[in-house]
Length: 316
Image (cartoon, rainbow, N blue to C red; front, side):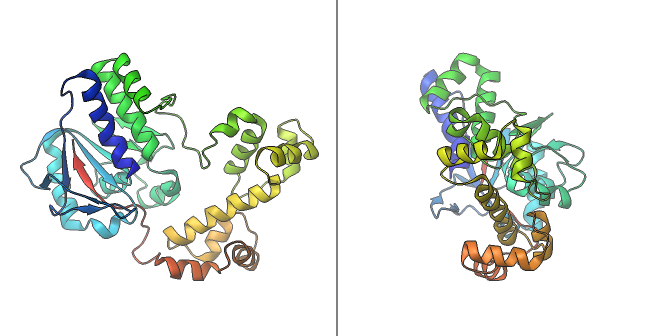
């Protein structure tokens, strides 16, 4: 819902602030029926996806399990329809749909950080980047809700000037400080980065070393801190030790892989920095009160391949 709102409501706000209809859009679904968002709310379309619609840009918005919602015949319709637009974009998992249509081969693109490893394995001809959003000629992609907001601000700036983009950003009390090439973080540090930059720097080091873990003493040394000082800073800022936070970060990564991929448990253990499958399974069960296998079974994951995100398609 936030990804869809980041696309639509920025244009609505620009129209309101400018006092004129700068942007026009239609909401389109594959079958003309309401698309149910992952939070359960339905989005009513203006029109069904057909070969008559056209415009400046086609925004393909998708979320979880997009493979289940867009089959091969629909991919052909989308690919054919793209020729009727000056530009086409994949919003969050919309990047997967564009890639499945063959529209991202040899192009730079991005997708949500959770899915980037699986995306690169499935689409090796795409020049995947960890950027917030990527524009490659007439094709654009974004990594999620906030990066989509950044893309729309960029669109407003490029078409109607910086002042209007600032006013739109201010209307949503959004800082708008991100550039396209800013890397998507695993953890959105937010206030932590301002309150205690040394803790933020530690977390960023942990993010980079999920599969090949480094010791807390090494992290402290890289930041010119003693282990005791680093532990004090984490306790004061986050209320946990750096070791506990690091373990939580690795287990969260593991849980995402368990739910969202069909990777074997052994491969997941390796990717989340555990040196043995029994150790991984034991720690996972202690933290989540269920084994990795029970977690996968309960989520219904792993049934249709390397699936990620889901639902509505819109044309703007």
